[in-house]
Every structure is written in C-alpha cells, then in structure tokens.
Image (cartoon, rainbow, N blue to C red; front, side):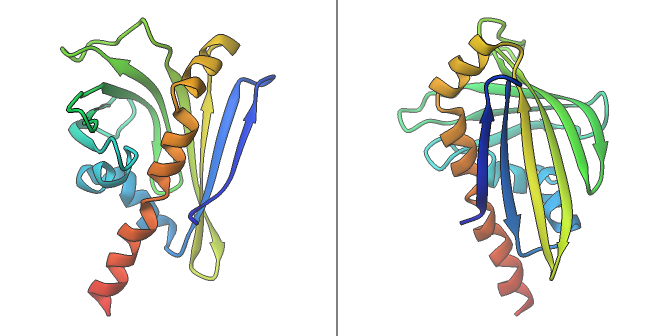
Length: 168
C-alpha cells in the first residue's frame, strides 16, 4: 500500500498523510506538475478529477472538478502559495461554486506537500493539511476527507508502474 500513515491531530488542527513510492522525487513531483497525471490520481476512484486550469507557480491557481457516480460534479481549487520543484508545494485548498468562485459555505485548508528521496530509489511524500478550526476539521473529516485522500494517493503506484512497463 502506498499510504504508510495517516495522523490526525485535533489539538494542532492538522492531518498528515504519508506515502512512499518506488520512484525519484522528480518523478513524484511530476504527479503534481503535469495536469493530466494529477487528474489520474487526485480524486478517489469513485470521484475522478478533471483538471480545468493548472498554474503551479506561486500566485497561480489549479481548478478542478470531480465527477461522482451519480454525475454530480463538485468543484475545487488550489491557490498556490509556494512551489519548489521537486520538493515542496504549499496551497490553499477550497471548494468552488459552479462558476469557479470560492464556496465560502464550506471550509478550506492549507496543504503543505513535501517530497523527499529516502534512498534505494524511493521517495516519501507527505501531505500536511492545516484546518482553520476544530469545527472545520470535524466537518471535512465527516465529509470523507481522510478516506478520499487515502484512496486518491493509493492510485499513484499504478501510474508509476506504467513507467516501468514503458521502460521495460
């Protein structure tokens, strides 16, 4: 399994998902930097993502929607704060209305992604989410955030395995 740990800290208002991959840090970064690769894993299997806009630079924005099994299409966005390829990405993650404007009825988070080589051709990726309040954390966890991100990250190994087949 790709995900090695999920740690929720209600006191610190954080949730961290750690994962390890048999790939270089540069290759893992590409999963974020290439919009077509990002949409292959960002949504959980039952809510695949489609990336509508992708500007992964500080001040840039990534916009996406997910398509549910009943055809619903919730929208989201990231406002990129930091991007230091291939090791660090920080963004404000929020829900969006149908017209792309922020949906302020639902809480957002700040996500801090770190990608580091750990030896033997392996890389650790951590997604550290910071919630604005205990209520926001409870609401997003109740909406399935932990399961969703765990399932989403769990799809990465299959993408990376395609590299080995192509090189093979």
